[in-house]
Length: 225
Image (cartoon, rainbow, N blue to C red):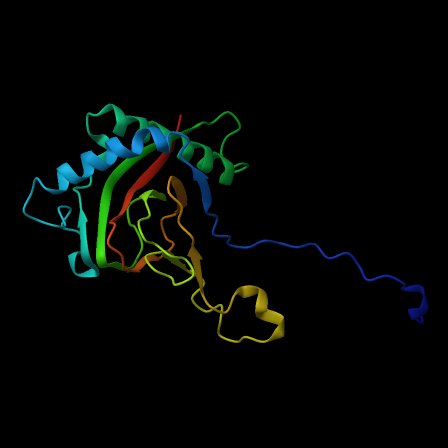
């Protein structure tokens, strides 16, 4: 039978299929203005209490000119810290439920547990090399004080790296959507919280400025109840 091409008048519908997305989530701490001064005092008091700048003793050579707490900051017995702990845990439960919709049993509820948490005091010239976080599914960064961070000059920002190692093996007009730079730079704002999957490599680019840059970070595991 001969095929009549004239009967084909429209391009067939094309269904997009999203594969292997790396979803990140950004929000603001609604209690930021109420908590920031008290948290700042707690952080500086803790930083002055020990001889080691990197109290966690994790990745010491990947960090420069910054101070880091032990990995239990959000577990400490303090009302202001526990307000943050509850807020972050609630956000993690919301995020985990959102991205896993359709993969969990219908009546399942997320049970996020923050397993590690710490602060960074980044001083003039400070940085943190590219890394990812093991032994957790979700991570977060809370910008307590961005200091002199400047997005236009990429001063002290967090940079996230494309996890698709071979995505840029060939770039032409058809692959511009892949973002040939291979990075996503986040413009930090005081009070901002970013939550991201643990496999996503990220760094803190070198920071230059006299006011310190203060962040609180955390790792979490998620179960079901």
